[in-house]
Amino acid sequence: MKFAENNNQAAEYLRQAVPLMVKHNIPPNPLNYALWYTYVSDRVPELNAQLDKTLTTYGTCPTMLSEQLFRDHMIKSEIQGSEDIQASLISLINDLHEHAGDAAKESENFSEVLEDSLSNLEQAEDGESSLPLESIIQALYSHTKKVSETTRLFQNRMTEAQAEIESLKQELNKTRQDAQVDPLTNLFNRRAFDAELVQLTGITDPQVVTSFVLVDIDHFKRFNDTYGHLMGDKVLQYVGKLLKETCPEPMLPVRFGGEEFAILLPGTNKEAAAAIAEQIRSKIQAIRIKQKKSGEVISSITASFGVSQLISGEEAEQLVERTDKALYKAKDSGRNQVVVSD
Image 1 (cartoon, rainbow, N blue to C red):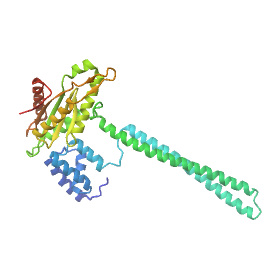
Image 2: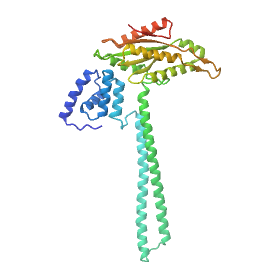
Image 3: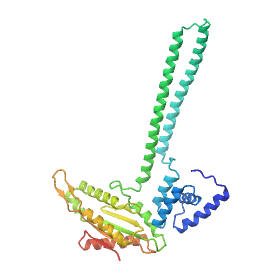
Image 4: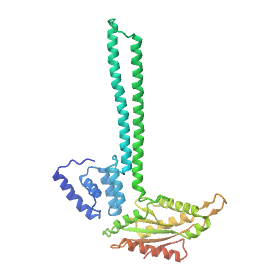
């Protein structure tokens, strides 16, 4: 994206952007400066609509959403990345340059052959050419075919290059996400969760509510000991899939660690969060896994839940601790149930 404002206009946009960032607890980093500078300049209506929607839901713009909006609306067509990806691009460009050079060389040779052939044809008309007409036509045919083949190869290489560039883009996006995604469940991990929670706990607007749910699979160690870790991994994957299906954006389901999951629910009070938790509890209890070797159907999977609503001024660690206490109360009370923190 190009910015063409003069100094005065740019300064005015920045003066408008900074108070908005402060008001909505937006971290003052270069990415967010660019995002909110673009917002106040109103140059990308789609971005403004997404940011307005995000502010209505969260009261802020969480870090992961800021990065996603930045990629989608400001650098969507640009490739930035690691040295490996840059090296791949350089190699690709050099390869295309070499193919283009070959095509240009063949075109230049063909031009010379064409000039010679035309000259010989003129001499043949005057009866002065030493080459028979068949030889002149054969030379033209041979070089025309060679140029055509070289051009075809170059066009094919260009098509392959487009596919390689698309692959590099996908690799870049995957690299960006790997640091925040749990490879087993494909949910975001604790690192991603912590970043979002810290930002949400910084919101001082009492009208903005956020709830938090902790999920722990009951007797998971015993399950692993009985059925093996491969079956245990399958259970974790099932639960991860359930959470993803039941908790669409702006909710954020994550693998919290081990057999524990968490859900961040911005814009949701604890009563609504408890209803969602109960829905998930029921779905987990309904999981049936059939062992391939023995044919045994495993139907003893349950989970316990702790639910809390963020209190104004509360630190992230305090919210997690309160929710954890509610979770352990659910376990102490017989497991397979939802307990809401006071």
